[in-house]
Length: 131
Image (tube, rainbow, N blue to C red):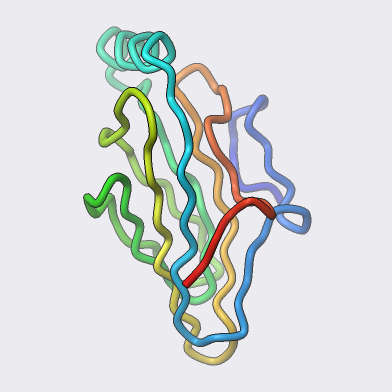
């Protein structure tokens, strides 16, 4: 199963999902965005209304997404895929939080943050932390 329609941003579900044995878990990670990259991304978004930074994810059962402390949105119930527009990125360090809730089992999530030109800015993998 793939979670992105952007050819350069494919994330294979089986290799990148994260899960926890707790019913409610927040997965989080900091990541760096260079000023040049952010300017290019914002310029592209301004030039084309449909060119934005998008977080695509599948969460079992559901997740609340925050970027730099601001709520970006909530996922639809599993097994449906959610796509959220992200405008909270800034130059330098950024923080993404996926507050996941599993109702009948452990929470699980797979996600990919993709820029307007299809570049993968971040995806779920073993480098994430949880609480």
